[in-house]
Length: 433
Ligand code: FES
Ligand SMILES: [Fe+2]
Image 1 (tube, rainbow, N blue to C red):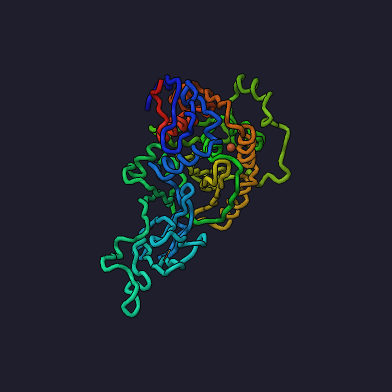
Image 2: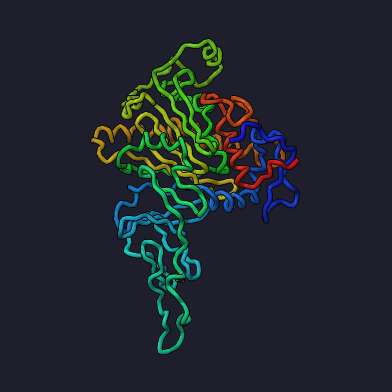
């Protein structure tokens, strides 16, 4: 990881879709994000190629969502529809959801169980690993029609992605060159192992459309600075406060991050008392009429009440009290995104634990008492940045470099690291003077 900020004066986005007028990245580098990066359709199109179909592992689901031979799940990597399947030997596969004949969509259901993947248009059949097994009328009829003599089924399978799993999470990538998943996750893998330590059971889903560019949301759970300020429920009812013991871990590339807080570990500090007077989120007089939602059990035995983990560019794993969920971010155009929440527990949870998780599911999600504000802020940002012609984010909380801010949550270190990696992947030339 580089320790210095970029010294460039101008950066140009290269590529066939670049604007006629080169876009200029602010000279300060990754401590700024120009607003055109959230609003320009050409930039959005380049992201699909360079990030979503580029060198990144993308979360596609839980192993528990495809439990049996023939189980499938249809989802997205960026805008590309893909299908996750479980084959006869138990192995997991991810294929592009597009027939190798003339491009028809194979799976239209979100979930299901099949013996094979079947294209309704001309009945090409694929096995659960994506190999073509049969093409209707390939030998023609009565000596006429049919596919050429040199046609080989083995040359016309579905587009297969690389697949890797970690603790029940399934990731896929279009890249043949990307390092193995666990190497890519680095130190942040420990945050996944901490939570997903035994077989999972899916409890339910929540999907929301956010009228904002995907990066406004990707920045949000990397942004430990806002958590105890924007989310008044956190501070007011003590699940997460800046005055509590907390920390942040990034992997060495700076792509992935998690932060945590331990409820009930308040340390008195004059700084906090001074600042808190100006915070909307500190309301010592408010009480819940039914406080049962706050009753959480320290199930991992380390006192952590909140852990939010983000992997680049579109995955979140959260533990908020005993609410556990994944979030998958799906871009739907330059100013639209979907967020899919999958709530889960463990296979061996008793009924009371499942009930607690379901009650606490109300803390997060599209209408969650904590997270409802996140999408609202993303949409307000998108509206405020709408013209995309001027202005830029200022990202210097905790310092100006990739390391500054250390492990404190009062920092935008993970956001600076995001923009650093984003610019690398997008080919934004850091050395242009
Ligand atoms: S498009 Fe699928 S069989 Fe023709
Ligand atoms: Fe948030």
